[in-house]
Image (cartoon, rainbow, N blue to C red):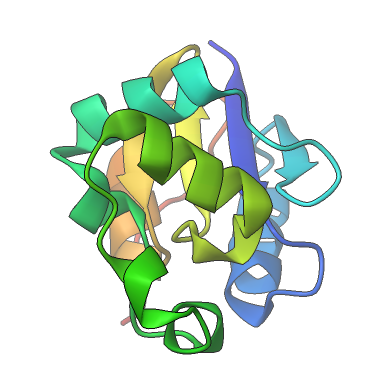
Length: 129
């Protein structure tokens, strides 16, 4: 199994998730959305796996709030992918893959404990929270 975490280098939540993975000896690859923007096909696949664009995009952050009103209603997959590629911070984070399957987005210890409980690399995934 291989794990990949997408996020932003300067994101506090991504930093917490990376520290959790490091503490639990999980081998993973981190990809910064800004440095390596996901391809449109990848974005469409993630949206399909997670249940739609609304679950993939962070509409609560400053990037979304600062968009022009007409950009906040993409009418097609092509418009969503263009918007996200122009504004990578719109993607919720961290986004975690096992092999090519999307495990999910976000971080808390219980969530990660569940996602990585079957990883042979982890010695202890019991949450203290």
